[in-house]
Amino acid sequence: MTDLSLMMEQALARRISKEEALFLYKNAELAALGCLAHARRMAMHSTPIVTYIIDRNINYTNICISGCKFCAYYAAPSSECQGHSKQRPFLLSKEELAQKIRETLKLEGRQILLQGGLHPDLPLSYYEDMLSFIKREFPEIHCHAFSPPEIVHLAKLSQLDIQTVLKRLISAGLDSIPGGGAEILVDRVRERIAPRKATAREWLEVMETAHGLGLKTTATMMFGHIETLEERMEHLQVLRDLQDRTHGFTAFIPWTFQPQNTALDVQPATAHEYLRTLAISRLFLDNIPNIQASWVTQGPKMAQISLFFGANDFGSTMIEENVVAAAGVSHRLSEQEIQRLIKNAGFEPRRRRMDYTLL
Image (cartoon, helix red, strand yellow):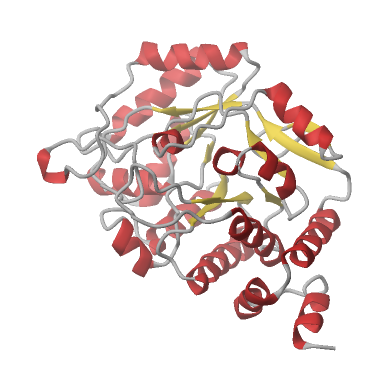
C-alpha cells in the first residue's frame, strides 16, 4: 500500500495533521478526495439533508479606512486612504435600514447579516443604537452582525477591551458574529493585502471572547490570492485549535478571491482548486459541524457539485449582496431555485437558523 493510499484510508479513521492535509491536497486525485470528504460529511450528518437560510446582507456603510487590496467595495473617507476603489461613500439611515429589513421579512427572512467598513468616526454608541433600533422595531430579526475586524476597530476607537465591546453590543441586541475578515489567518499575508486590518491574533481573540460570552459564530477563508498552500493549511489549523477550546463555530465557509476591480493582479482560483480546498476543509475541520458551499462565487452548478465534496449547507438566499458583486461576480438565487438545485442533486432541502436548528 502506498503512502497516499494509507493516508487516504486513515483520513476517515483519525484526525489528520496539517502536513498530511497538504500531502492529500497535492497528491490525491480530485474524485477520490471528493469521495473521502463526502464520506466524512455523511458520517457527521447521516440524513441526506442540505440546509439553507433566508437572509439579507446589509452593508450599513462602505466608508472604510482599511483599504484592503482585495476589496472593490470600500469608499475611502479621505484622500489619505484613496486607492483603487471608485465607490461612492454611503451611510444608511435608519429608515433605509428598516426598509431593507421589511423587505426581508416579506420574503420570510428572519436574519440579517449586518456588516460595514471600518468607519473612522462612528462611536460604539452608534452601533448600540443601530442594534437597539432593529430589536425595537423588528424583535423577530436575528442580528448576525459585525465581523471581528469591525469589533477590533471599535475597541481601538473606544479605548476599550474586546470583551467590554462585545458585552455592550450583546446588551444592545447582537445575536451572533459572522466570520468575515478572516481572509488568511497568517500575518505575512494580512500585512500585504490588508495592513490596516485586524491581525490574525486579534481575529481569533474576538472569536474566542465571543464564544466565551455565549455567542455562536461562523468561520471563513478567502483563498486564491497571494497565500501559499502551506498558509491555507495554517489557517485551518488555527481554526481547529480554537474550536477545540470553545466549540463556538457553527460552520466554515471557504470561498475564492474575486480579483476583478481590485488592486490584486492575480489569476482567480479554478473550480478544481475550489473543490480540492473544500474537500480538505471537511476532512481537516473534524470539529466544525457544517461546511457551506459558495454559490455566490462559484455559481449554482459548482455549488451542487460541492455537495459531494464535503458541503452540507447551501448558504443563504442572499436577498442582497454587494461586496462580491463589486468584484464583478453577480449570481442570484431565489429560495425556490436553491430548493430545486438541492433536490436535483439528490438531497432534501431544509431551511435553518444561524445555529443550524431546522425550521
